[in-house]
Image (cartoon, rainbow, N blue to C red; front, side, top):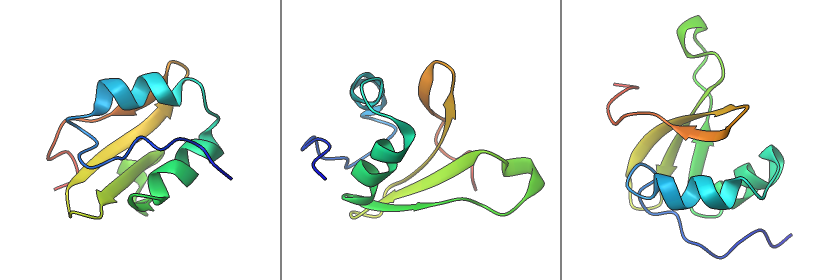
Length: 80
């Protein structure tokens, strides 16, 4: 399924553009889109419930979660 061809290289730096595009998509399609450009994992700890980690194909990592307002990208280094 085609979602968008906007490439995700650095989720944090691109967060405003990505959030705007994500508002037009459901959660499943957002994750499909992200997985076209990297890997998405969910840490298995109580402190990270609802948090996802994205690592782009270039190795840049960022954490994010879904809220009622849409996709929220967390500050760099949150997951370290």
